[in-house]
Length: 232
Image 1 (cartoon, one colour):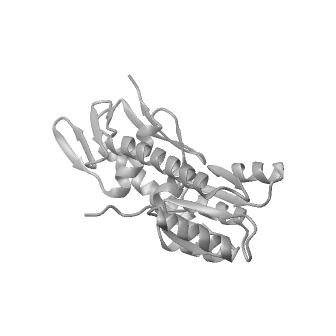
Image 2 (spheres, rainbow, N blue to C red; image 1 turned 180 degrees about the vertical axis):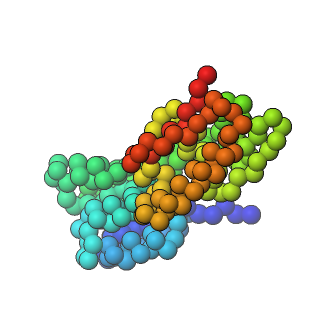
Image 3 (cartoon, rainbow, N blue to C red; image 1 turned 45 degrees about the horizontal axis):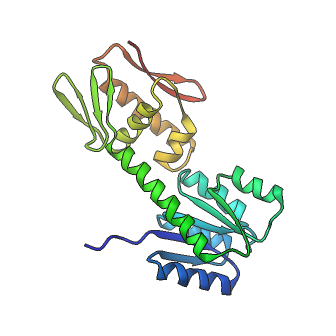
């Protein structure tokens, strides 16, 4: 079966540049969605899953910086490049503060952009592969996120997808603070009050699953998040 092409969201209001860039990237085996309006670009991101976003800064209805903020609220990890004629130092710094992986000033070389895209997608693929294969020993428990299995004393508990993702984040932050907002945005998509209450229910379930080892504890750091404490 042929592998799916990486999906790119391209937001660019310059008609000629947008089409030239879309055609060039598609010739290089990318699936490109082109929007010429910031608001439409955000709507596209809300509808579909993209592997990388390329955002012009100056666009009608919603500028690229605002689109980036909204995208980061939905998915803090998706790679994001700004493509901009704004070359002032303050603009570039603002772009990086919003979580950009790169800020590319116009005019730029399309081939250089292509290689930057390839590099960051390869890096993310390697990180994802490492994360998928990671397993955790938590006290007397063994946790395999890939199989969604939590094992203790020969007994296996199969976790739901959300239970699995939440325990995986707690394990990655072991003995450190897992920020509440980070978990909500990554697993539930937003940090609303109702999603927060839902996460509290899942924390209670995980505490129940881990109760057989007194050296394990999920501690609520009020207003900030949770710690999976593993004491020796």
